[in-house]
Length: 235
Image 1: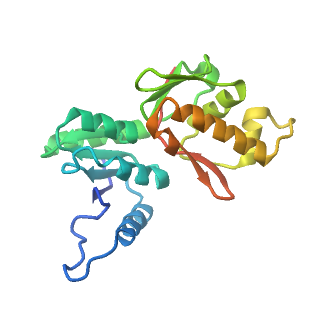
Image 2: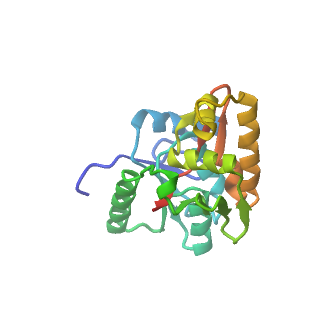
Image 3: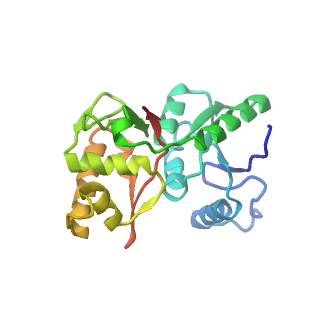
C-alpha cells in the first residue's frame, strides 16, 4: 500500500487475535469488549478488520456495538454468502470480503475505504439529491425516506431539517441547543423537551422503513445526540 494504514483486527466477540487469555483464566465478555474499545480509542486505526467468517450472518450485533461507539470504518471478512454481506453492509460495514482473504484484494479494499472515508462531504441539503445510510435512502428535497424493501416515510419540515443536519454531520455529538438552532433557527425558542420529542418522532419514522434504524440516532445522556452511520451523498 502506498501509505501506512493502521488496522485493528477482531473476531465476532470482539476478542483480538494474539491477545488471548490463558485457558485457565477466561475473561467475561464485558472485559473482552472493553479491551477492544480501549485499543480502538488508543490506537486510532484507519479501519477495523472484523472476522465474521464463521458467524453465518450472526455478526450484525457486533457491527452495531462498534458503530455505537466509534466512527472507524469496518471491513468485514465473511463466509461467502451474499445475503450475509448485505446484512453486514446494512448494519454499517463499509465493505465485505470473502474468506480466505487474498492479500492483494485486502490491500485494494483497504485503500478504497481509506480514500472514501477521507472524502465524506457535508453539502447543503439544497444541493443534495439523495443520502444513503444503513440500507436506507433519504431524499431531502422530497421530505422522504425509503427503506431497503421499498417502504417509505414522509417527513414533516422539522423532521426533514433534523435528519438533513444529522446526515450532514455523521458521528458528531450534537447538543440539543445546536439541533434547535439547526432546525428552527437562532431566533425561535424551543425547549430541550421539544427537541427530544422531535428526535423520537424521527426515530419512529426511520424504524418504520428500516429495522436497523433504532440504532441510528444515539442518545448521549445529558449531552445530546449522535448519528451513528456512515453516509454516501449524491448531489
